[in-house]
Length: 88
Image (cartoon, rainbow, N blue to C red; front, side, top):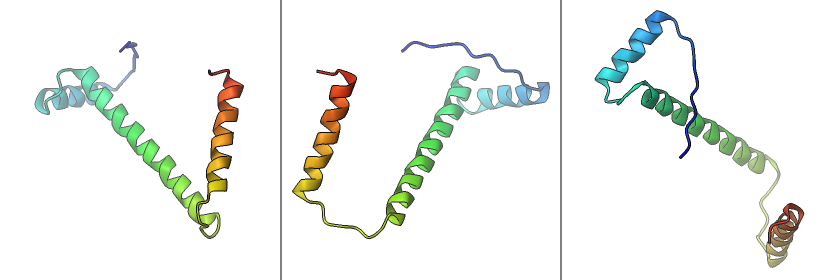
């Protein structure tokens, strides 16, 4: 996996605390600590998006039975997207 460098500025007190966390909580280095934070944030963000979509679905009206016509419509929309993107 390709990696990129990202520089951030922190107050000295925060840097010292992060260094302590890295040394006492099993992180190999500061980069591992920040990657862990970012992964956690991204997971929470995805969960918030999913929750919003679930609530949107619940608020969209009563449920209806899933029919063959529904499946055919979904398939057609998918095929249309594939054709629009030029995917073969």
